[in-house]
Length: 484
Image (cartoon, rainbow, N blue to C red):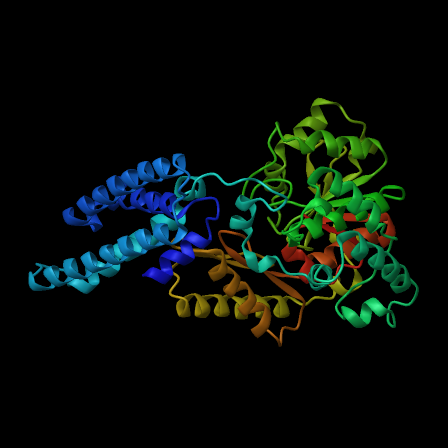
């Protein structure tokens, strides 16, 4: 119990031990918790709160008299309180075991209550549980939604490791030289030897300039004790890529869920991205939304996801040659849509006009095999993880699993990675991804979709810029990209 409590407190650095104990007490005494807490435990929590208040008064008095409260005293108070609560829980269980129950065993009842507790914990918004945290370049709310497993990139990890022996500016100076060398000799460069997974750089990157721009706002170089974190390195690389791609930009693509709008949401009329997208289109830049959402034969459902944007097209009476610069790539790489010149609504582009020869050669029996095996893996893994399944969604080119109970990011990630690792004999390319509240497996992936889109619009990688979520960086994207 002590270890569990301390690990939870470690995740809330903005709170003192006493403040965190008070938050835990509030959670225990919520109206939803009455059924699983005894009267004695409620009284204990009340006494604990009073003790915490008394200790706070004593601490204030000690501070006024220049005698600070020792950290050990705070921790001893918390740990002793947790020990008392654990002892009371054991005593309560002992008393319950001596009393017969009419229908449900004591263990089964406890399991049900524990399950209810964790479901409430998972569904509770973070601010209610842990209070507000200071925002930073890596916002806590975003990290909670995305999960820590996605904070992985060998290139960024290498940059962070260099900070053990270099200043940030020295790191960027060396990287500028190594990237220039890598662009000339990609297979034999020094950077390739140090980071074997590094890809291609289609444009030069001025990381020193990007670092100085970032440093003006976040004072990274002035910090003495806190080194740069993963998100800050990612932002610096993104800034460098934006500046480098701006001059020759012809096509910009965005991921949808988690990038243009929240997971499962729509682009409404008040979205701030609408004006930016239209300004890009008016500046002779093509814009495409590349999304995993797939609705075969239902262009109106794609339209609903971006209703605010397409309605603005019609409201502004944009000329057709400008609306021709907007596309949606759906189902990862399976459906391409454009704005109809007659109805001014979205319509499908015929497959033969845009799909690559490789994609057009996919056989229906191979597609069914991939989806059937993926569904089996999803169900088997969810059973092993004791995750109830609410729905299995089957589509023309995709299959998805909807959990039947609240869960955490790591469980959904385990489902997705299991399919990626174990469906090794698939006759077709596929992708498995964690959607935040579900897990889907699609035939194809966004790398193939972007390749087909560039071929359809006749652009080369140096003219394309894409803003993707980190799950899409698992695939080899042969173009300039940012992680957002």
